[in-house]
Image (cartoon, one colour):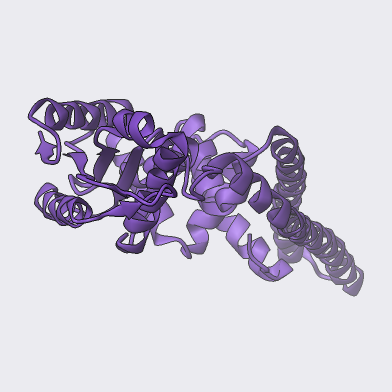
Length: 334
C-alpha cells in the first residue's frame, strides 16, 4: 500500500478500471488491488508474473489474483493467523467498496462532461454557460470527494497493517521456529520453499543433512549428549550458512538447508565442504569423554523444470536415504 494523493489514486484507477474491463477481470477486492498496483509499475516482479500469466492462459484466475495480492501488496503479514486474516479481509473489502464508489463517480463525471459539451455547443446566453459551469463543478466535486475517500481507505489499510505487524511477527516466530535450536522448523522452511519455488529456474537446491548414528550416541552417552550434539551441529551449520538460504531443523538430527539460486553442482560442492568439516568435529560430553566419529549424511537435490514442492522434497529424501545406504558420511545426489 502506498501514500498516493487523491489525484494520483484517481489517475491510477482511471487506468486500472478500463484495463480490467478490457480483459474481463472480475471487480473483486483482490483484482482491484492487483491492477491498481499493476498500473503503478512499482513492482516489476508483479507485472512480469501478470504478463506471463496473461500470455500463457489469456486471463488472470481469481486464485492467482489472491496469491499475488498477499505476496506483493500485503507481503508476509497477511499470511499468518485467521484472526488477522479476517481483519485484513475486512480492510480489503473497505478499499474495494471505496474503489467501486470512485469508479461510479468517474463514470458519472464522464457523463457530466459529455452532456456539458452538448449544451455548450448550443449555448447562446450567459445563463446557459452558468448552468454548465455549475453542473461541472458539482460533478467534479463529487469525483474528488470519492477520490479522497478512496485515499483514506488506502491509508486505513496501511495503518492497520502496520499495527498488526509486530503481533504477526511474534506469532510467526512462535509457529515457525524450532524451540531446541532456534532454527526454522518445517513450517518455516515451507514458507521459503513456496516463496522461492515459483521463480526458480533449475537453481533452487536443498541439502538434507542427517547426523549419523544419533541413536547410538543417545544409547552410549545419554540422551542429553544426543541433544547437545544436535544443538552443536545446528550452530555449526548456522555459522557456515550462506546468503540467500534458509536453515531448518526438521526432526531429530535432520536439518534442511534451502539455497536459492544455487545449481546442483554448486550445492553438491557446498555439501561436501560441510560434510568434511563436520567429520573433523569432536564433542566433549558432560561425563568428560569425547563423542568420537561424528559424521553426517547429506542428500542434495535441485528443482527440475516445473517440479512441485512435494516431489522436490521427496526426491531430496531419497538422496539422503541413498547416502545412508552407501555407508553414511557421504553425500548423494540425483
